[in-house]
Length: 237
Image 1: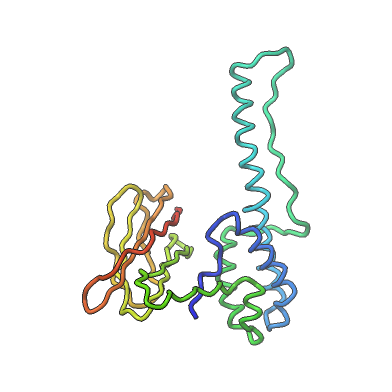
Image 2: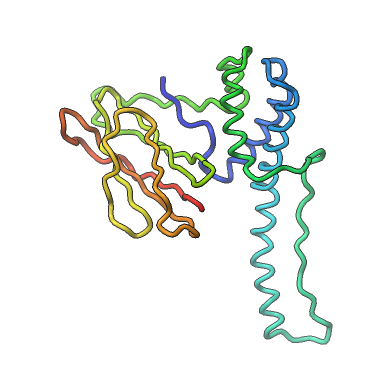
């Protein structure tokens, strides 16, 4: 049965994924045939990301409104005590972290492929690590359900690609369209094999953009059926 992509799309769910992956990989990695040095490096990458996407990012976001209010005090406040700008004190990182280079998530995705090729790897271990997505339920019998698409980012050395995964449910393929920012819908491709890789450069090379995708089925040379729900993802420089 087809599965959803394993990495959470919702940022709030990503820290828990990273810490689980790190804990399970530390316990299981060497036992399935992976090198200790590679396991240690990927665990370190994942714990850095769990901390940065969770406790650190939440603290930064909470500090923002407070800092803004203090600037207003500086502008228009009253009182006789000297004004001091607030300082940001980040939460302590997990114990044992060592420095990492940029690209930690890209390295984890690459290492997941190594994990799945390890001699002792099984789907059960993949589920423990969180590198196997949950099963996508089939459409109800007799339903006229549109295509089911999911989006994921693939970081390359020069840009972020969007991987558009889809379920054909017995159809020949899908007719895929996309919209960027406030632009109009444009036809991307007739896709017969999942995933489709959207490697278009950003409209503005220095600015992130929201991309939307929709699809309908393609059979006998014609698009048919209903559009699926619009899926959105942010592509960054």
